[in-house]
Length: 72
Image (cartoon, rainbow, N blue to C red; front, side, top):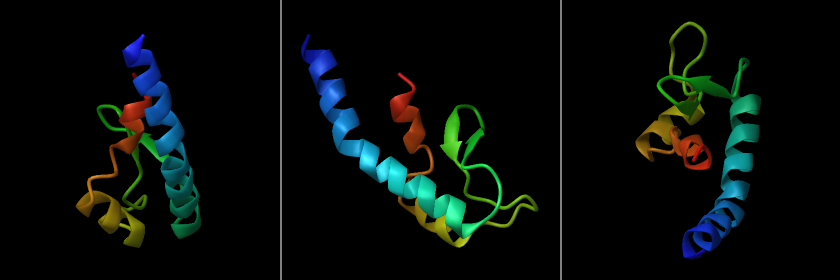
């Protein structure tokens, strides 16, 4: 029961950050928001392999694998 409550609180607190990140990725460059690279991750590169401006920040802050929190 405690685990379920903890997960609900975690989801409620972190969902806005995920939503802002998704909108920012979509506005920053064309292509999908998520990629399945061993698990769901925010896309941090363009289709030709260049790291996006937002992608550099997401990788540095290690937020590119943030969607994996919602997978469990």
